[in-house]
Image (cartoon, rainbow, N blue to C red):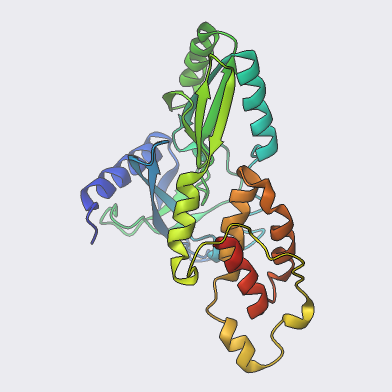
Length: 293
């Protein structure tokens, strides 16, 4: 592993593997001749605090989902998540009522579900037992981890009661009063019963990622009376080649998360540029860059 944080990543991978074993996620079986054998990869994520400092290193073992066949080793998969506007509403009500807002993290959240499909996977890289055996899953291993949990209650005693009940059922980490959630930095003044949501760290990360395309800053996300149209879509091979390596969808998606979180002023701009995700031209890209500026 070539990384300045190699030791931290190894510890994170060991912790993930230990959780998988503790949850009896799989058993080793001989490879069946009639089934396709899937492979996996490690996904490494740095978790940050609300002030932008590194909190911890997390490693996730995920199946390469593009290898799965619908109806054989996968079916419909979904994960219910809270809408951003509803989360903002809950935080606002909690602040106005001056109640407790605490946070917990569910370790390997998706391993607590049940798996109906038969899935066979080669042993994960770095943890191979030297025998010709495969992993047969008894619990789902998903490519997305949705594990953040808020507890809103009128008293600390109720927080402790619910926290204790959850820990008896799931492996969880108590994170205290909410400070950082889903890329939001949350600042609360209980005396004035106000709460502020900031995405400065996320916005800075987006700007840094697309810095090569941002020559200088601009105060507004779109030009006045600017109109994007289908006529600006690529009409020949040269125009298509010019857009081939442009990260249009990635940039729009990155800004979209900022908009639904704390920048509703960018809603009109996002509506316009989102119409050309399937086929965008240079005029459309210039409009996206304007928003990044």
